[in-house]
Image 1 (cartoon, one colour):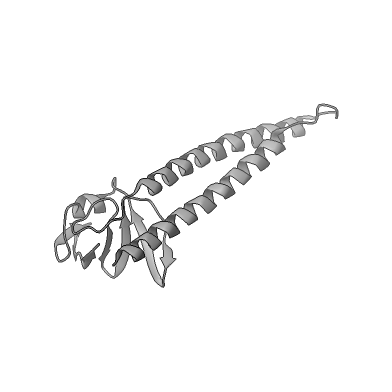
Image 2: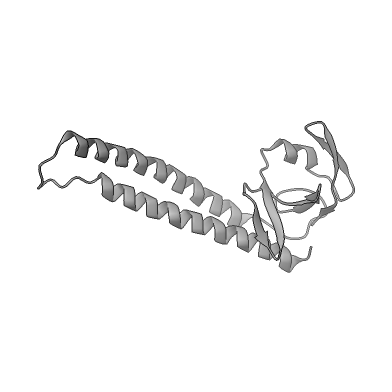
Length: 150
């Protein structure tokens, strides 16, 4: 995989993360607005209960938004320069699947290839860290071979 292709993968990850952040920020605003009670109108228990629930959801969405902002910062800092061994920023292939190392990501597609993320906290990363194309490793009792590392 060349430098341009790796950058396209990173850009796709960043764009996706930013879209998710924007959606979360919209949810925070909506729940915040829903939590506000009209002080000029008579209030009943149901109104107060809905307001409390919306306020709780606002807190949850704010936590999600904060986590997504951290993920975007990590993605922006991810060095996707060429690599010959597995470490953060590497793109690896094994078992017919493609992975970006150093990020948490659900499957996404770039140029017809589906990628997923491998966190540096994962057992898979522990098994492949520092390895090169052609090296074997074991995960969940199954031996795999790294087909490519870039």
